[in-house]
Length: 234
Image 1 (tube, rainbow, N blue to C red):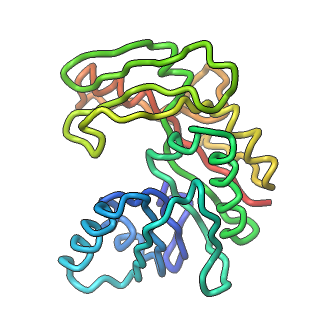
Image 2: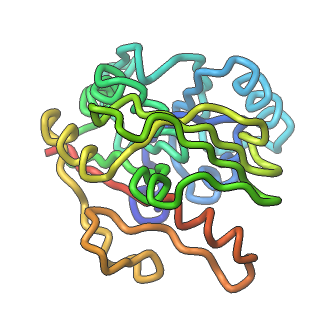
């Protein structure tokens, strides 16, 4: 997705940068500037250490401690960004209606016309359909299934050897609901039909990720709990 929606010289905002695991990707793609944002101050500190331990990077990276799902922000220098990424964390914005709208408000405010907000998100449809899960790799425990609103339906999730290796609370996020919210902020879905390996035939607005033959059955099942999304600012 980085290869598709960025190019050398791109100005990128990365929401939920975590501990800086994508630094090498930004440098490899010769991005010009990355504004890396995370709500966890310890992750920001770890990302800064990882960044400083690398050889001089051509990509300029600025780390910011902020909650992009509750706080308003716009480009600091007044120049819009070309792209915004959000890898494996947009489902936290589904905790309530104001947070999910803030996420798209920030994307719309920060991007130039034609800029793309893209990433990977936990698939609420797949997670609720699969029910509670307990194996050596992951744990999922669903909470209130008959939640009356599209936002705020929670579940406990943990994934072995990952940043969420301890149980944490995530929120059900459906791609069809994201499409509706994005439209209210002038952002339209970008078709991902050329991503053949991700394609599904169930008519969902965005394709699910799938596992590879090198993965175990449990790993492939976890991969299928996520979908890739992209919205373009009109």
